[in-house]
Structure formats: C-alpha cells, structure tokens
Image: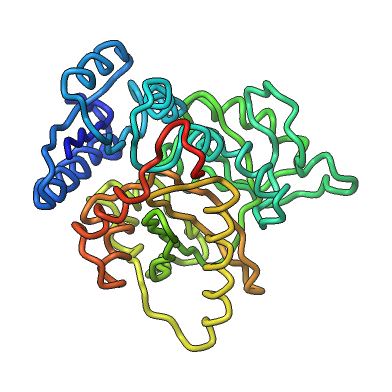
Length: 341
C-alpha cells in the first residue's frame, strides 16, 4: 500500500517535545518500509491547502497520522484528522472528534464524570468561555483550602508544568491565579485537585477486532523528599540535564498486593477506549491516592510512540515488536463515513 506519514512541521527553535515527533516519524517510516509499503513523510503546518495538494499527488491508501499540533498549537490536534475526514481518506489513530474531546481537558473530564469514570475535581478554566459542569467550587461546602495543580487546558507533554504549579488555595482564589499563570500555559489553563500518591501509565493497542491493554507502568520518584512534589513535569519528561529527568524512571515490576489495583486500572483504561471512541493506540494516565483510589488524569488519543517513550517500552514488555505494533495500528485504521466505529 501507499502510506503517507503526516506529522507536524518542526522548526529549528522548536521545543524538545515538538522535535520528538521527528523520532516518531522516522521510526514509523522505517517500520512501514520493512512491512513492504511505499511510504513518504509529509510535514504539515497551517497551510492545509499545501497538505491537501501533496496528499492528492501521492494518492495514499492510508495516512499514518502523527500530527500533534499545528504551528505549536496543541489545540489544533484535531484539524488534520478533520481534514482527512473531509477528504474521505482513511487514517490511523483516533478520529477527529475523539482527538478534540480528549485534548480539551475539561471537556474530557466532563465526559469521564458523565460516564462514571473517576477523575480529580477541578476549577473551570481561564478564559472561561462555556458553562462547564461539575466544577468543584459549585458544590456546597467546598470552600476550604486544598492542594491544586494548575495545568494547560489544551497542551500535552507537561508543557509549562513544574513544582510552582502545585499550590494551596481556597477555590475562590483560583480564578485569579489562573489568569496570572495562563501566559505560561499556552493562554488557557485550569486547576485540578492534586492527588498525592502513585502515578501510572496504561498503554492500549488496537487491531481492528479488539484492543489490548499493555503492561502497566509506574513512574517512580527516586530521592524525592517532602519538599519535592511527585509530578512528571516538563523537566522530568524532556530536559536531560535535570535531576527530575534522571530520577523518574518507569517500572513494570509490582508486588503481588498491587494485583487488584492493576486490574482496576486496566478496566478503567478499557472504559476510556470505549467512551471516547479511540482507535489504533492510546495511553491513559492515572494517579492513585494513599487509599488505592485511582483517578484518571488524562487520555492521550495520540500519545508519543518514539522508540524511547513509554508506549514503546510497554510494547517491549509485552513482547510486541515496534514493527508488529505498527501493523496492528494499520489494521485499526479509521475509515471516514464508515459504520464501523
């Protein structure tokens, strides 16, 4: 088959999380060639007419969609799959609607809450455009001081998140803090109850017939004292010269008493796959409090699949080669206007 790998264009001054998409594109390109497909890479930006022209010239049977943003805006992650829907070209990964609903974190939390899935309470975002339901401060008696984490509304990869994003405050003071911090968080942010406890990532791989939950991973916080919040911020993910980067390893080894918790996390990850209509591959991030109660932090409908990222590590733990995983993802391709969703 002819398969085009579409990814967001990277500039010389792009941040490390943006540049990482080139590793993904290279790995996927090589896997597709090994599988015998005719393949090209198509970087894209806000010039969608140019992307459309290049797609029409190549006439791909499938687009392998790795576009995570456009012109550094994570809120545009759904635009490329939306264009492919309009052009009626099959593509890998989650459909455009799922990309949109999971990338807007409050919208995703509302949907989780409606489906009965556990997610931390929140304070609605700044700027406050729509009337989002379920806000913590709307509940009677919830005006006491709590510990919060302030996050970007749209951006992933822990953009703008460090220890300063963990605060103690009454809900009534949060809107003012969000306005101040929004500049560093891509212009829009919200506050979420900070869950003190353990952090887990569960990766999922579909093949068009079923979905497999890959071995769960826990992020360890080695050497962190009580003054260091146990979060996987931007430094821990992307800045190789920091303490956080070298002391937040991933572990797939668990004690026997963790078995019920891990089973619960797997079931919740599967529910997220179904509720949000995910396809191909995904990752669900959890925090687990000291009473073993799990909370879903984020659903990554288009997670990083670089060979050195968590998804590839989970594949390796499951005994699935990268090439075979790409083959699985191709079998779960989204076909616009089909009735198989």
